[in-house]
Length: 286
Image 1 (tube, one colour):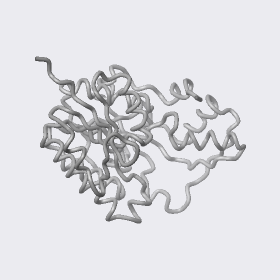
Image 2 (cartoon, rainbow, N blue to C red; image 1 turned 60 degrees about the vertical axis):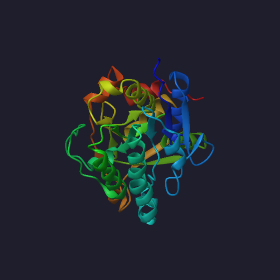
Image 3 (cartoon, rainbow, N blue to C red; image 1 turned 180 degrees about the vertical axis):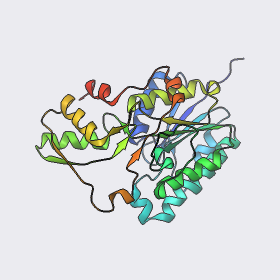
Image 4 (cartoon, one colour; image 1 turned 90 degrees about the vertical axis):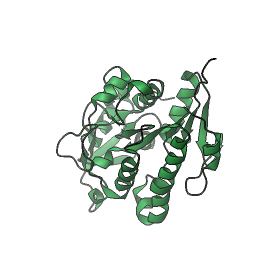
C-alpha cells in the first residue's frame, strides 16, 4: 500500500513570502498545497481568534509552514496585548495542537533574535533578542526547542520582486522623486528565490536535516545604501537618492547591524546563496 503524500499548508499565504512560496509549491510539489489565512484562503485561520479549522483538517505527516505574525514594530508597541496573543500565545498553542497530531511545522523566525551583532552569528549562536518583536520570536523558539517535529528558520532581510523597499524605489524612480537612505543599516540580505527554494528543499528533505534551526541568510553583509546603489545601476538607472543620518530614536526600534551566517542553508540549497548583486542583475520587471 502506497503511503499518503503529505499535504502542505502555507499559513500566511497572502503575505509577501507566503504568496511566492504558495505559487512555487503549487507548481513543484507533487501533493496538495493549501493556503491558510484570514481572507481568500482554502483554510480560515485567525490567530487572534480561531484556528480550529486547520487543526481539524491536518493529518499525520502533513506540513504547516508558519509564516503568520504581526511583524510591525509599531503595532507590537502600540497593541502589545494583541501582538503577544498572536505572536506568542496563539502561535505556541497552534504549534502544540499541530504536532500533537504528528504534523511537522516550519516556524519562521527572524535575525532580530540575535540583536545587534559585533561579530558574525551562526545557526547555533545564543539568542539576544532585540525589541518586542525579537523577544516574541525568541519566546516561541524557546517553547519549541525540544519539539522534534518543529524546525525554525530565521530570515534576514528578504529581497525580491514585490518587497516593500524595492517597490518603493521603483515608484520613486518613476515619479522622479528623491529617496533618502538611512546610512549604516546592514544585513546579510537573502534573495526571495533562495528563501522559497530553501523551504521547498527543507520540506522534501526533512529527515536529512538534523538541525532544528537554520539561518536563511545571504553570503555577504550588505548595507541598505549599497542595495540602493545596485538597484539603481541594474534596475532603475534614473533613481535619485542620497544617504542621510537616521533620525533620533530610529535605532531604538531596530538593530543597526546583524551579521547572520549559515553553513546549513548552503547545504540545504546545494550551493551558496546568490548575492544581492546577482539577484538585481537578473531582476524581473514583470
